[in-house]
Length: 259
Image 1 (cartoon, rainbow, N blue to C red):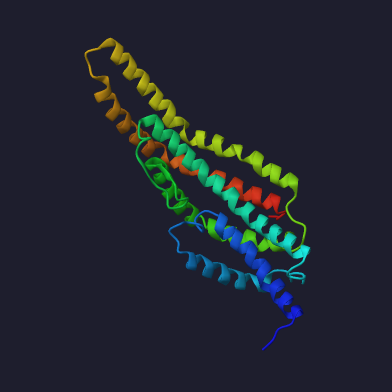
Image 2: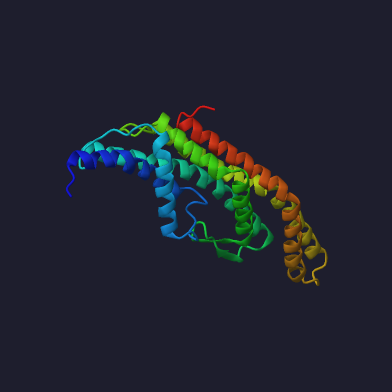
């Protein structure tokens, strides 16, 4: 059995270009790209999702597989998928940053554990927030919304040599500042309360030098920190949900998706 170049190019246009965009999204997006998920499972998920999307997306243009046009199209599909996943990665990174600030404020900066999402060590407070945020992301059907945006992106940005502009990339870089501002906003109540606790411990240490303030203040800071985390947890998750909605809106605006 032999295949002509025209047949190979037609199959490439029908399946491979959507497969590249879907694969780039799965590799870059949180939850989907978790290191705890086996690679074979992720590849199978990309294949199935691409097969499901093919009937509802526009027909891809047929180009020579080894031409300049094919190389540019390949880069555009990777860029679109990575941009969608990278924006959501920044949303989750804001929560990790806020947890790190809280952990260092309450003296738990040394207590770290492996983050299965990114494969790096983060403080246990950040890991606690990240687990809750992942559950909230799934409860809010964030994964389904992301797949819906992916399907709509094939209509607003069909497979071609054109794609996301340089101005859109600059906007993504500028939006990266939200990572730090949102993280500090989540951690600010706990930081302010722990600052007052440390000031009080400093006053006690000066008023009663014979008291071992380190032996008393360290466990007190950790205890008060845990209480404050429990009290502020609903507000932190609410801020995360708001930031997640803002990230989804940014994806819609960059990909020219209405609604």
